[in-house]
Image (cartoon, rainbow, N blue to C red; front, side):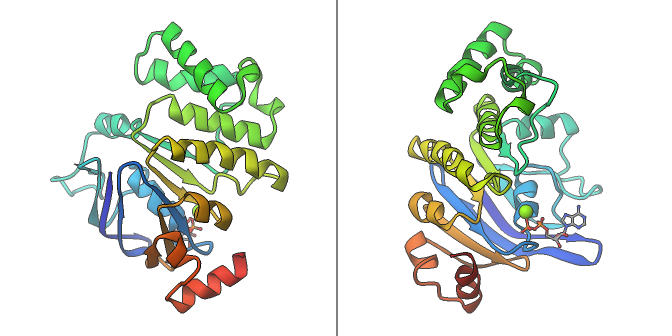
Length: 250
Ligand code: ADP
Ligand code: MG
């Protein structure tokens, strides 16, 4: 589903991604771990056309993420095509990013109606089904400000699912939550995993990684230091840097 080859990306003189290679197979869950500043968010953003790479290539579902630096005519996609492809990838942020002035239901139906031109009644019915799925059927009319962080994040997941994405990206989905609310969000993500949703999840939740990940990727300073099944990377890491990181977060 995702192929990342030799991807490099700098901000000014700071090279944040220094030759990333990564593959995510359809139906699999990849968990990305790594210290703050190692380039995890930047990597997710490049996959979702939110950040242009300097060199290397990324394909999603066989299609080039063609949004490089301007001037690279060969791969430069038109803005409309970028937006269209972006709707095929769901992105769940640390801080939920819900629209505060819209109800829960409207948050979920907004993109299907405006971007995908779905009939309103159809979008509303789908949104109710999604709210059921994330355990928030009774919150359709509420405003985000009246929900707990865990509930807001579950709405954000429902909103991402409303576009029926072929790939879901999570950037530290539970990092902004009070500890007692982390479980309800991870449970929703686990449910998606069981249903075969293809996902890349950046998280520090090692227990979640152990339980759900098909592949664990450890990043540090813009490189993939180590990757493999959780039983290898988490329990028998080969690299000293991975061991040092795990000893801090476990
Ligand atoms: P992580 O998610 O692993 O914490 P990030 O991908 O957010 O790491 O950031 C990696 C590095 O890139 C950090 O040093 C960060 O300050 C820098 N960085 C990220 N985005 C930008 C940007 N838009 N402009 C300049 N520097 C950035
Ligand atoms: Mg980050």
